[in-house]
Length: 334
Image (cartoon, rainbow, N blue to C red; front, top):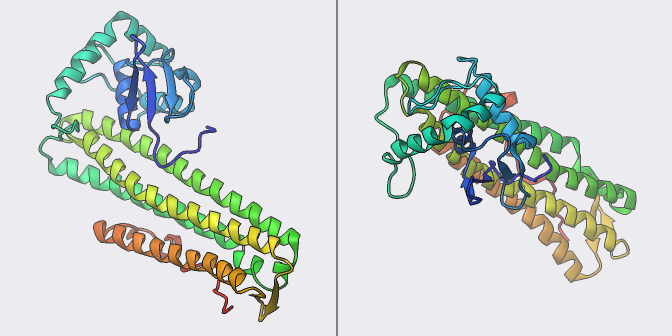
């Protein structure tokens, strides 16, 4: 998918009257697909900026359909809980159900579920059972640990770029090295987008699994809604984390660009640049100060998440956990 994802995906589709309907996350998309409101022929778009296309041509729709048809507990998509219709057996079946009355069933289903909405429009979860709580805890642990594992991979990738070496010593005098640093900073942005996209796909799979678990024996009523809330909470946290990573990448690019433009304006002392102009030196130190602050903000973010989720990363080996280390570059004295 070419769209740069900012956190978790949201979607739009045009209904039969041509009205644009927004789906805030993948759980709502799964509901719309299951109920027949979104079919392979529905005009569909990811995010707010992309153009509408037939849903069957959009990867996000394809992933939801595959997830519904390949549930680990039920090889067929669960039936709509209004009681109308039978489980769909293939994407083509969704079209048939839509043509022969699934839309009416979906409307009825949403009318029933609308009675559970609070004044803010959020579905209220029923009283939880011990079985549901255990299932939610397992999904929460899987999501949180998967987030941490992906963050650790990103940390390792950043370490491999050796930004500290690129911005010290003779490397600061080699334009090709600085250009390579700018390329690496651009790839850093792409790595962050890839991390967020991977987590979005994982969240979609967990939501579909929660929906399947909820419908198996009646002991997990509310699991689907609770999982949606869990996903939204992580979305808020990870949006902040991604912003910090993107700001770090942009600042590294600025350091490289500035060093390239000021090749005749600094000398090297102990491997660090000493600028002839106080203003040039102050600006360079400002970039490094920004990296210091971003590192502190990242560590503070991690501490806050751990405080709210004490079990986060507890099941991971220490080597697999992100370290949320300090700044990537050492500050210059000049």
